[in-house]
Image (cartoon, rainbow, N blue to C red):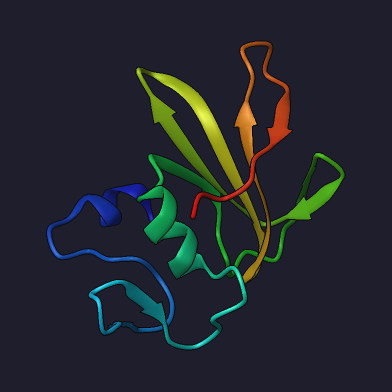
Amino acid sequence: MSAAAAARPGAGPPDSPRRQGTAGEPQFAVHPGKVTRRKVWFLLGAPSDQSGSVNDPRTHEEQGLRWNEKWVYVEDREVVRVVLWNRYDFLGAFRVRRDGSLEPEPLPG
């Protein structure tokens, strides 16, 4: 989903449906132990922009990882985080340092 589509009212995270747990916390219905696109969207919010697509066969290399979709998070007009995907497989979340280098970042929660 593009950043523009994500900004539309009612737009939600991609992938499988989410159901509410008994205490109101989200329960990730399909792959509870797997890092899914839906889970990352829930934890980090909608990306500000993206590069590539889950269905794009072209791949790129960054941090020694081959990816075909990159979610970009911008704060105060600076890129602060990227999330790399290869199809539906989560490759990692990275903090962008001031010098432009990337540092692996654990997901919150």
